Image 1 (spheres, rainbow, N blue to C red):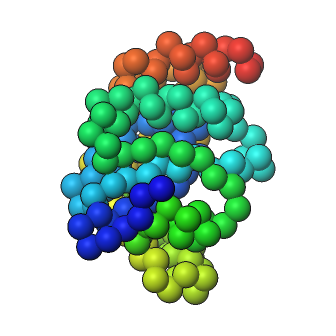
Image 2 (cartoon, rainbow, N blue to C red; image 1 turned 30 degrees about the vertical axis):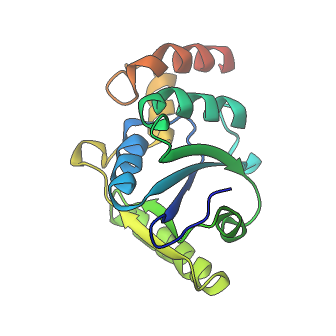
Length: 171
């Protein structure tokens, strides 16, 4: 298990990643520029009724992140329970959260303050994606698929057939 030291700062980027989008990947790359190691942590949240299982989401992330996983500076994992407990277990000093629009801010701000209350040593770092991805979410991606639209600009090309296949199985 990796732990943060002054020369090895770990950040956890939690999310459902159902499925992973280019916006998620953009935030992972941004976090890599600031931190020594990024743990991409897939949440086990059954209340969200995910399209993909946790293991499938992890596989999609590993496939999309294949070039950077080799560096040893990014890893993919899953968790359930409190995020702050997971971050402590991983030795993380921060949580990465994406802010696409003002509408994200209120929820993310509340979560950051609660996490600060539960784990004062853990910082929340808000990252803004490239402008190309400010409107992009997994929810919108699934809506495009539901309506028969083309998602090739929103996910890594290697994932498109897998996402289409899974979506056609579910409907």
